Image 1 (cartoon, rainbow, N blue to C red):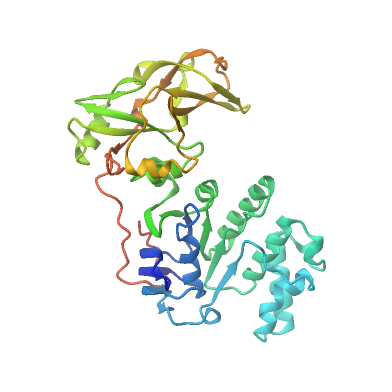
Image 2 (cartoon, rainbow, N blue to C red):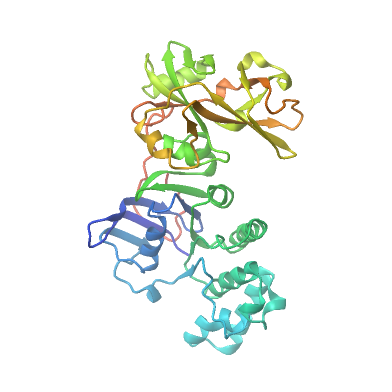
Length: 411
């Protein structure tokens, strides 16, 4: 096993397009790091740079103590799991899993032992003598993982390995991946565009956009303390709601009413340089709304009336959709987010979704009283999209020395 470090790594193509720009990220030995972002954000290119499938234009990539920029992929001692499985159709599962060891000249007994051990870990022992065509999608993906495991590499690189599976298989295989990493402890870089996978699998997550890392940290860090509108809108399902607002002393003027800011939020706001009277963008996660009739201490938040346009009952809870009469938010960051599913707006106003408890008696098409927890608000600068509650964006620091024994988490 080994740490992996990007030091000012850049990938620039011949036409001048930069797929990855000045990437600084340190991944500790044994860490499960997720690279997440929309299509074209540079996450797969970054992974391919580690694998040696893409050259590094500028900067350095280290695996353990070694600079690997000029090493061939086969000399990097990494194993890659692809989206399309890449199994040999004419070989059995046993032969597929042991093929790389056979090419390396490993003894037959060692190959058999490693293949059977990996099959046992992945629960595919009954399929060892079957061919890929006779396996389900989930089983094929486990074979692909088994082929990587038997090599006992310094690191696993996984490029959207679950994207070809149906919803149920994705959940099952995701669970298997978590157990596998817990058991093996091998350094892993996992690329996905699915933020649910990112939140459930990773020790840490690096959110990428247009070739740059926007924020890196634990799932809880990114969810609770996003540094800008992009991270706030990308992480979370359903996505965070955004409304225009204006700070006026300890009051926050919004389309759903005047909200009184808690003392702790005012302190954080002033510490982050966001005090004073000016326009802001207010972020509210769906779970921080509730049916006002179910709230025992409504004074701790704010109650407002709205018409519920669509109510999606999910059994354990429900999603209430309503529109807030408000002009379109003009932040450049939010304008770019408009093409993503995280932001919904219309000519009539801004569309909002609230997550309500199953006990709620609110009906679709009726006016209802909703409560919002004002202690959980997120505030962003109206022009730059930066968080006003964070002193500064977490820097992606490069460790003074990168060793295989290092367990420092850099964020």
